[in-house]
Figure 1 (cartoon, rainbow, N blue to C red):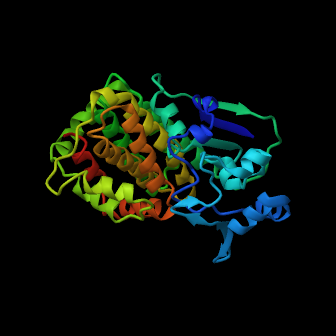
Figure 2 (figure 1 turned 90 degrees about the vertical axis):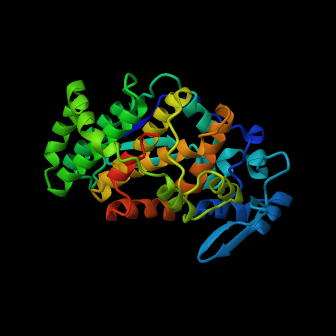
Length: 359
């Protein structure tokens, strides 16, 4: 099995009680069967406390919440299960968070969700272009149903998109415009059943001359100057976990407000966020051949964060907004599916995103 992750992942350590937030609040912690078996056999007063905290509804068992927090969370911000028995005693959700793994045949891709403040800090403070590292554990090849031609085609497209995002000699808005154009043209080939031409297209996008010509052609679409308000409406109608996010949206934009500008001091952060979103979501098109809607959703996330961080006074505030956005949007399957639907049906279009790239 091959394992792929960003070069910053190995520096991650949970901040535990020192974390400015906690992953034990704002969402329900669903327990797996192995964890429930351990908790039912847990001895002593702690075992009784853990069992009293368990609640079964709609065929799922979770820990109860109080004031939005897991009832087991101690005042010092620590989990009593982990404190007594170590991280291995946690349920699968708590043990793996903020790690998310996607398997594509013989490759497992690991991402640290930026809903975690420490994961967000590592990503946002990484000054050099993010690099993907791949290791092989030497395990046997396991038969799978992955379409190798489609996988390699989409992998080449995602690699090209990430390289475009990291073209630091270009303004960030131009990089994002090229990523959107690449996604549109890849989708056209997918729709036509010409998957074998996607690597050729991806290679073409690495040419500086081709990029220059493409940006000239895109100038007319970008000159139309849209408003951010449609994106705000999408965010406002999503499932919300916290009042903090609702309050932030209420103060973020008005109907006639023009899009915010990309702030030069946060250029590296915009880049790293775009690379993070592309790595996490673009290759999932292997399941439904919907590459463009997934990449457009990545651009949507980035443009929303540009707007929400427009007045961020420093990196600490910037990172806190990123973490809250990720918790609200990325951790809701309904919200992610809504975005896919909007871009797949053309309710939101790539042309619209192009029109709000520039302030």
